[in-house]
Image (cartoon, rainbow, N blue to C red; front, side, top):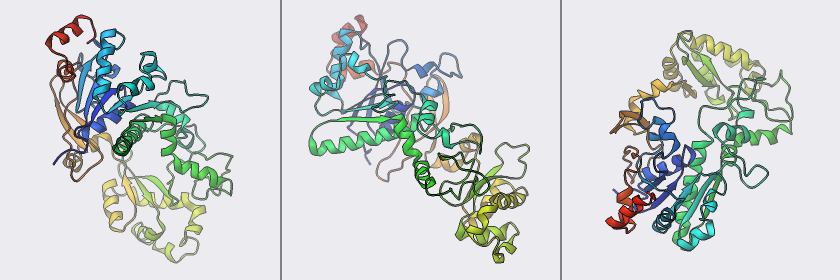
Length: 414
């Protein structure tokens, strides 16, 4: 069994999270990802949020598996020559620098095309063309400018960002799709092309149901939101707490021992087709023949009361007991799983979603594995590279002999 992207070479000029997420995904599928780093320091995340002194941080290691590292001073003339060789050698170049950084290095898109007409040049930026295109963007800025924060948070409370990295990692996933799409088109056109993903655009894509609701709001109140019928809607989609975005009422309710366990909660959706089973389970079979309760329309004005009654029942059981009972009744639900529970979940280890990796300096650690499973392409998660670990190896592949490699080091190019 061969890996899906075996033979594809990626010139990885990315750093921190958004770009490395993209290139790590390509590496998991078998692409040879050559990570270019600054001599002496490397990717800034190697030293950020360290839990062990003088060892690459988990921030870095969990975003750079299956890659090779070369140190290269692209500001030196010798370094520029090596970089040109890398451009000619690779199928795609991926970068998430500030706007114009590669141009200032002397490698505009036009110049890169002259070196390698077949290369795919992929970039992550904060914003697309417009008034903010030159602004620097980080994860939470992207969430705020892409619509996530304005629609997340406690009802009538202040905006909140989500713990999921939808700005950085989310955009990296979008860019990976753009790269493989461009590589596929190259098989027909024979040419490379530019691929760009803006973090604002990526977050907005993940918030599409809220843009849907913005348009629905013009034609009347959003009846599935907690603000209906007792609250007032303004001109924009409001924050909706834990309400479901799919049109079926849902909420997080407490479970047994919630006073001592901050994650003893479960999300329950009162789906119309499964409502009879839910009502019976919580001891409210009386609702089924009561016109005040037995239709979705009748329940809408009383969602607070309905979930309070559901919670009276869930408080008598653990979140896993609730899930076991309601799953058998086809009631959509999901326990709030802590990071500790996910790290120890046996099934996630078996599927390779959580993987234990051995590192020569930090020892064994847990990381997320490839979330995308292919039946005919295996994934073997290997450790992140040490800084410059593969420099000589990669230079040799570019055609430099031992003396040329020595001179490159002498001139500070690598």
